[in-house]
Length: 398
Image (tube, rainbow, N blue to C red; front, top):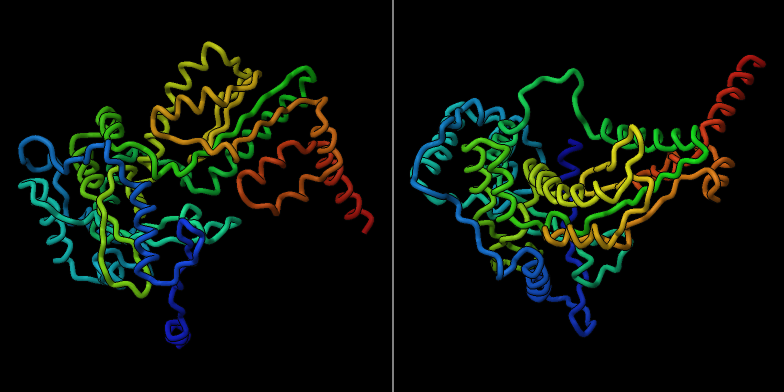
């Protein structure tokens, strides 16, 4: 009953308020779609870059063919209640989960035949919807955040590839986002502890944030990188997933289809895309490391960088050159968001260090976000110990 009421009262996503080049507000859905399509095409399409072919060499089957068990394991990992892609099948993930086993065999035959005979299978097409970014003006198209809705068949293949390229070793603990947050936080706390122990030590932390990291990396550069670290079957599958990607902007009230082909960045919306971004970013950081080994003096027993997704913190006794980092990343089509790039100097005689002693570490724990959590690293541990001693005294008195 409650689910029925929720579906009945569900509101449709309203169209965004968009302005044209002259600053006039656009109301017509067809014109809104045209403006967003032109803006998205400039981000995801580069005429100077070649399109990736879905297949290379002679047609041949996969060395390790996709089995019906691989299909079933991948389907079980799909989430329910997801918006449909270009296949326009609502509740598609739910239908696949509760379908008979014969469907798994048919999907496996379709995917294996695609690689065996090089038949075209348009599963990389998707819808592109946009949302306004928080804290920014809602009218310009540049302040819109693109969200790509992919079909279920592509998600199944990408999940299979991801499960194959992951290490087969079983770990005692499961790696989740919360564990990564804690690891980054305590790495910065360890830096603060070293400064607290050594009064003459100075640590410089320069935090870089990538601007539209998904939308700028080069697919042609990514494939040679993957060739050195993945097997032949996975490389062929990833090449197929990166090719023939077409997006169509979805706007309420406009039924006209105007898809455009993309050749920049892996399509977002599946579990494999973030991994490909990390691999591409790691390759770009190799050039920076080779240049910084000669000039940057690292901190003893501490890493020279802390990476969390597309956020990078370079750590050293000397301040790193932002221009050099930006120049090296630009070679790989990666853009640095200079507005979010910040430098922090951890030293005992700074004003920030003196002010942090007057603050309690517990006052900032409610702040969310990685950048907000970084401010807690400067707080003194002695203040925390005093707080714990006072709480113990209050308990004994009561």
